[in-house]
Image 1 (spheres, rainbow, N blue to C red):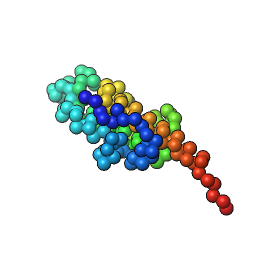
Image 2: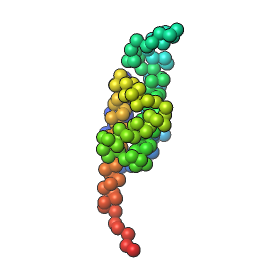
Image 3: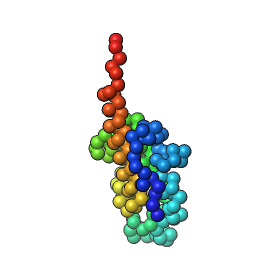
Image 4: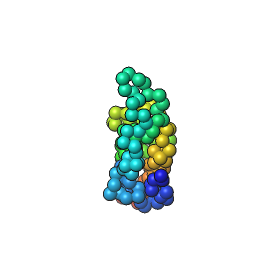
Length: 152
């Protein structure tokens, strides 16, 4: 299934007007809500991890818990970059925002990276969020440069 958020062209005006942490297609909905709705209720083998058995493979299905962790991190990272804390202008700042968001959501960055690597839809949503953050930072920087200087 395709996510409607993956197909949208990123329009500069909409980036500045969209509240952070909200869907690109419908700002009334939370970011990534459709991904969580389409996820399997458990994800993977239901007996995996029971009775002291270690999970066989982390890519075994994309359940609600895995996607909810990723979406929570992306929502928080989107909020942080929208507040310029850190700005989303560079890959380093975007990575820093993701790491801060992981800490705020209680997800280790290594776990987040592993979950995103194993889920194509979450990876696509992450790309859209990071692209929008980069454009937002560039637009805000451009507005700051073109804004008339206030006279003393």
